[in-house]
Length: 287
Image (cartoon, rainbow, N blue to C red; front, side):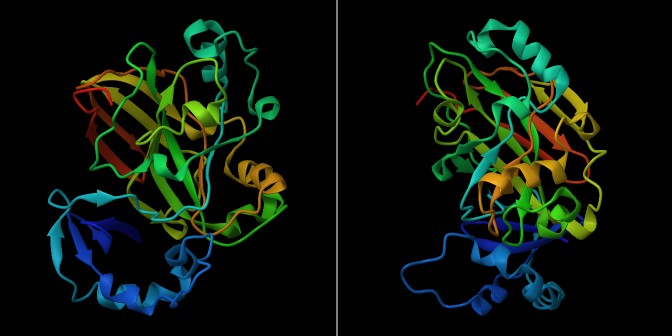
């Protein structure tokens, strides 16, 4: 199943070239009172709501996939987790390009660990990426994103996939510089997710997926998730050894080689096999 949020928080099922409005099922979500939960309540209830979603999709209003505004498919991720230096070729290019490394010793994810991006950095693919700091380099990074569906902590890789709700395409936009990654990568609009969530049953093996990115029609990144240093189960094991993972948490699994700068007015196209594509503009002016 492909699920999207669109037009200001409506819920849709994507079938072929149509988005079918199934927002009626949101009325079945539990009523919440303060203090509100720290996870995404829709993702937490996704398995229970699936029969109702499938029923609503039979009669819901249909919209062309090109005619809606896509919100992030996860509304309230408690954590957006980044996986740095998780492709060998990207580690090499980072070590060789002083504009990426800024004097840091580039090794791999096992030495660097993970980082967190602020929730306020999250946008959908119908929004614009708004760059900051024109005197510095701002880079694109296409990534496979994993959405956690069930709470887990200290889970082993052999059991990790049982806790996945689904997958999405993501861009981990990056301001280059000497500061910590969580600081430079948490700028508003620097976490792109969408256009939809593909549930885990539709993508049982995320380890052999092509991913690519073009800027203004020119290929910048073209790789496959088989080249991940820490694959998806290992990433979930690694992340859950430090954090409690909750429904709606997003793990951006890392970017392959070919990262490069974008400037205002650029047009970004990207895709991950089985998850769809995005085409979005970098806003014409710096913030």
